[in-house]
Length: 119
Image (cartoon, rainbow, N blue to C red; front, side):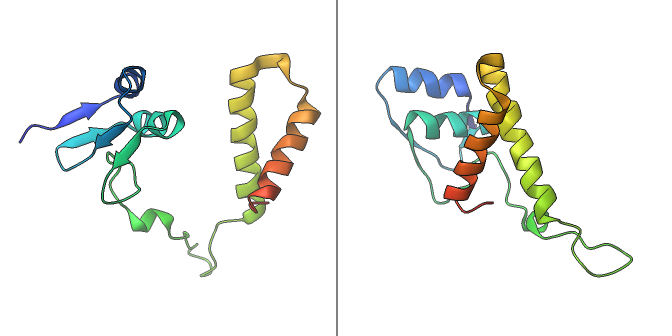
């Protein structure tokens, strides 16, 4: 059976046309951006799981990597938090440019992460 691919633009067009549900089965593939756009626009994806349909489930990617020298995981919560902060900062800067003060942005990021218990 041929697969139907949906892009971010397809999801935008659906929402603009008033269609806010999409049944996702074995014959439907959404790009990652389409999956994210659907969440932002309130398009409900009717599917058996919450993973982006285009993404295969790879449990080995979520397991911490162990170094050869010792069996401790290489992950570091502080560096993970800083990477997340940098990604958020970069995304906001890309969207707003110099319209926002760096110190204010850092304060907002800290408050949001504290509220969602990630920091």
